[in-house]
Amino acid sequence: MAILTLIRTAPAIDPEPLELVMALAAFERPPVVVFAGPGLGWLNPQASALVVGGKAPAKLLRSLPMYDCERIYYLDNDVAPHVRKQLSPLASPIDAVQLQQLIAQAEHCLSF
Image 1 (cartoon, rainbow, N blue to C red):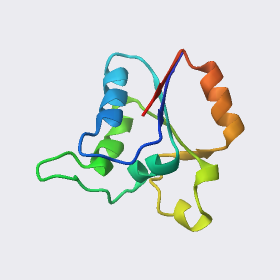
Image 2: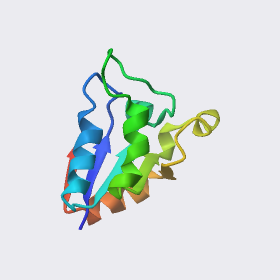
Image 3: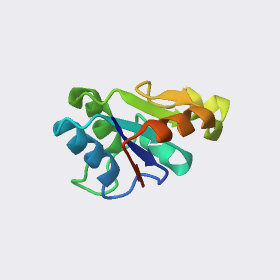
């Protein structure tokens, strides 16, 4: 069973949501990640660190496949058609019904 991490907050100085996802994967707890609302900012492939010496959300996102984090989604209802092209290709769109299914199937659900 997977652990679902729903990220609905914009990137912040501390990239705790993505670090938690990587930690889960490192301990062989298969994560499922869904970005929604302001959390879609994490999917910006150009997102840089918010402080000097900080961690860039874009780099963390690109490293997820190295941790076998491949189930990465975004809530399509929250994305304007012209914005879809600007999101990281690592994430796939899902709708509200599919999100409900992921929640029902998850062993645990974490929300940021």
